[in-house]
Amino acid sequence: MLRLLACLVAAGALMALDYRGGWLHALRTRSEAAMQPLWWLAGLPSRAGESLRENAVTRTQLASDNARLREALLVTEARNARLRTAAAENARLRGLLDSAERGRLDVQLAGVIDVDLDPTRQRLLLDAGSAGGVRVGQPVIDAGGLMGQVIATTPTTATVLLLTDPDHAVPVMVARSGVRLVVYGTGRSDALRLADVPLSADVRRGDELLTSGLGSRFPAGFAVGTVGALRADDSRAFLEADVAPAAQLDRGRDVLLLRGYKPAASAAMPAPAAAAASTPWAPPASPSVAPAPATERTR
Image 1 (cartoon, rainbow, N blue to C red):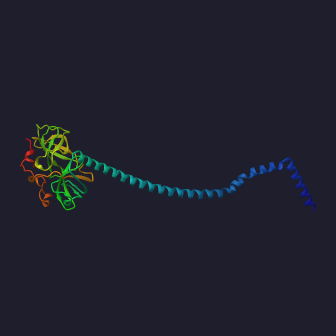
Image 2 (image 1 turned 90 degrees about the vertical axis):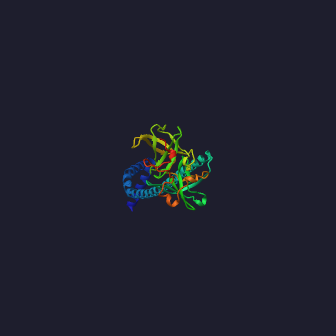
Image 3 (image 1 turned 180 degrees about the horizontal axis):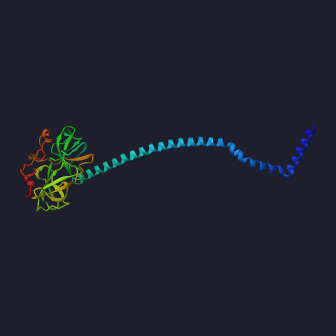
């Protein structure tokens, strides 16, 4: 009992002293400061676990967002590629139609559905045939110039022999000087060959070659190509040169068929069954040089 009374008295005295002097408050403050590291260490496992959980959730979310953004980027790039392709096709179509309009040509637009650019066969297959008015011998052009001629048709398709086919020859003239020559196919879609050029002929590098209209196979005035560097042939009696085609023979999905021009009966194409094995434009053969029309030889 006495101990209890002593404790109560001591407690009351301490409370009075703390109330008046505040010295216990200072002691509590110092004690709390001393205990802060212990509290921090005690809460460290909990904070570490919470941090790991947050990091795991954040990493998973970031991985999901990254995958979604990569997918969106791929889809956007695919769409942009299609748009660029469509824009390029539209530009080519506008070029085709603008060239036809400028020349006041009666033309028919046809799509390319197959290409054969083998060195021995340079052909196109079009999605327009005899049912659509396409006929054998019909010239084919694009915005750049002459591409070739139709050599066979079905009701729904047409086969085009390109200028670059080794069996093809085109009567041309030099736009600058009017000199008449013949351009031959080489089996390469990016090159033609100008042969049998007389040493005295007024032909220069960079000259533009146009169809001459001779032979009644192609109408006159269509661009065929540009002359490269001239060089002596094997006989040293004539010159020859590579010619860069004016038409884009190895690209584009559409071409134009000339409807307002009919080749003369004497220049008619061979029967479709024999067209693949014979020269579509058949001039008289010469024993010393490659076949070419007599009207195109300049000696």
